[in-house]
Image 1 (cartoon, rainbow, N blue to C red):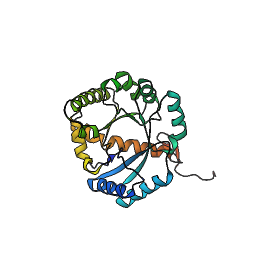
Image 2: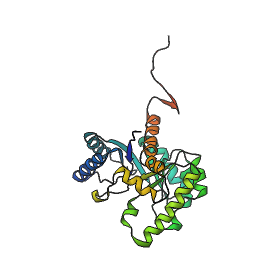
Image 3: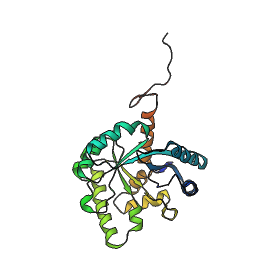
Image 4: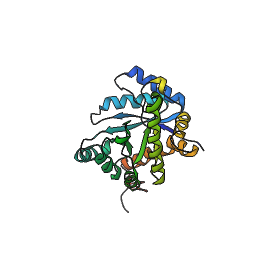
Length: 244
């Protein structure tokens, strides 16, 4: 089976075009089909267009992604109302249980990201997974911390990830593995990302899906929804014309 590999969390500074071109070129050499760079509500259209052009030149499909770290549920709702139709992927960075619960049950949210290294501030539990299983949200795991941490902090993070991924699998919540890196030495081949996923409990096929089928499925689903031809899931306008 031919897989379309994706890294939906490559941290590229669009203002540094020389470094951006180098990272995008390396991603292409590594075999990625999709890459995404996180923007915030302060999206600069020119910067996004420049990154898209660099990716097109390198033969990579650029995915427009927004990351948001809301302080309150009201912040989250305002953000989703304003930006859902401007971005192909929406990620909510969850640093409180209140935000995590609200994001998990909202069908406009694609990715739930828990960046804290503190076990007590990682809120992906069974209640969270049950909510996410009824929406379209996936659990995103960034591997950067696994690459840079050593000793007990790395062991504790792996323990948390094993617990969270086991819960996600139990409730059929998709897992997306991303790099979360912005430095060339930390970039990894797609199958190397999948190999890291073995460390926190994904089997071979599940790990490969986490860097291919799961992220690319989110992209394709949302592109269909953002299309002017979209009517409802599975229903699109093929051709418009005058009735006879």
